[in-house]
Length: 256
Image (cartoon, rainbow, N blue to C red):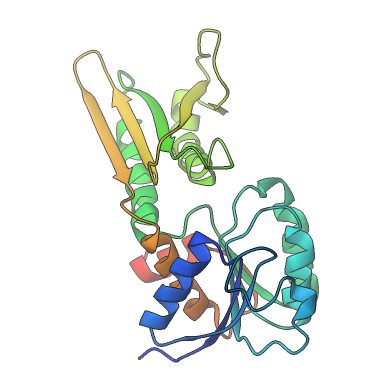
């Protein structure tokens, strides 16, 4: 049984509208829409929301100003789902804000359930392949030309999973994501990022030997999966306190 919630949308672009549709399908109410430029937004800034009615906020916004926005959510006791990416360098600062305020926040590089299942598949596959030294590992991602961050947060998550699973046994401790104009180092995993066209998102991991290739790919068809995952995260974090990753929700759901 889903308990209806009043949700604030912080960012009302394409992903904000997808999230609104996903929230309404699950019986929730969108109480406030905040965006400085988007048509249909109720407020241009969080400071303009004088008496927020929301019981949770879902944010798909630009990374600039993430600390100020989280501080506002915490001050108003609104559990936050931060689906914004590109702020990995500020995770410690944001965590400190949440913990100091006794607030609740869940974040992740990718909120799609399918993508997070892919993370777990990659982790397990790397653990198996790591036992066979003849296989090398590499990966790449494809995204539309308007994607702001490169590599994506999803790519970094996958790359770090590979390092964690292969690093100790295979001597891999670096993720090479820049354009390589040199031979790749023996201690590196190469993760290439390509931008162009209208591709929603494709991530591929390759385990390659002289004899064959094992290829694992996750292909996004639409943004709807991201929106649904963000709404599920808002439902999950209700009543909790602390700083969580979407992976915590997935692990609890998968029972791993």
